[in-house]
Picture (cartoon, rainbow, N blue to C red):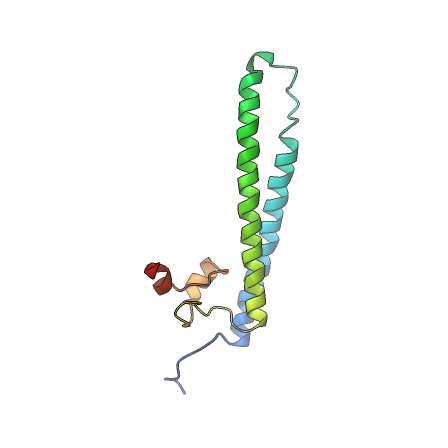
Length: 126
């Protein structure tokens, strides 16, 4: 039995990963809300009438800031989607199985990147 190759994580391990992912989702959601509120508030930082000489610079900086916020929001939404997909894999008991090699992804890797679908081996092959 000890020499048997492990094909999936057991329910206890999956439960631990699920909790880790749920915590990450909660934090990622908070981050997304901060990014979105920063994006909405960028247009009114309350200094419109105090520095007319820097207005052109501010407008350029505002566009840049909105683009950055938008890119951050998109990345955060993708991260949340990937985490939620990982929860689905936990429910299906396919979590932690590399989609290329079909071997278990190292536990330490999953703790660092809980939404990973590739083992280091498969990642290096890319």
